[in-house]
Figure 1 (tube, rainbow, N blue to C red):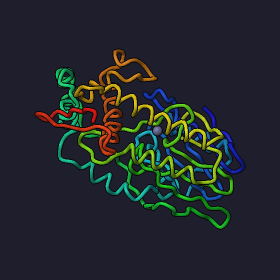
Figure 2 (figure 1 turned 90 degrees about the horizontal axis):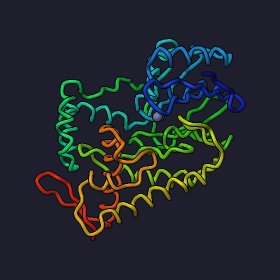
Figure 3 (figure 1 turned 90 degrees about the vertical axis):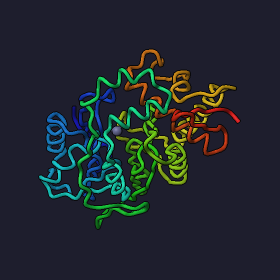
Length: 325
Ligand SMILES: [Zn+2]
């Protein structure tokens, strides 16, 4: 894998992912502000790729003054500590990451949370299978200490250049994009990808309405002047506005699909999820952990619809049921 100078003074590094079909995370080095955007996953392969591609670019890891994390998923934060240890760079992320760290310290184990959620989503059939993972699951800890917290609209500047932080919650509550207005370019992290629809999900043990947040974050980007998109996966592309429209259309039609799947019945999250026409593969071919992701995505849509008064929710013996109004 090699890096490339994607535009004048901006390097795109391709950092391999080991067990992820996406294949790699892009990290961008913006020379004028000595800023690395996202830091791949933690592995020898990714670390070596970063070292080599940085060297090929004619710059050095010691030049990096800050690592900006678009969000705290493991395929974005992996090498932040490594870069910091080499260069003394500050690790920067949205201010809400302070709260995310707090949520992670929940007293319940991941296994218990997943078990409870599986039951409330109407997936009791999976509990036997799930019990095989008891003991091997502990709450995945995201260990990255943030030095600088950003708010929406904050500039990241040097004497020569400046980019702006745009808070875009949805894929993750702390997700940010970076706008380079001079180049009409947005570093979009996982918020906007060219082909894949970014995963927007909600777990029963978390709060909020991430799909509403995601849709509002898409609208927010409608209002900025940018054409070029530098995402964290797949490939860089032009045409931000039309991609935003596609993503909004996708979620609106998925929401309508869910309303018609519910029909006149009372359905659990798993019942609805099993009837959705998933693009990646049919429900019957999904392993449990993929089904669980699909159910969390479905739940985000159900909560979005419920909050808009389009469907109603009932809880019977701890199981969530959805019906049309
Ligand atoms: Zn990612």
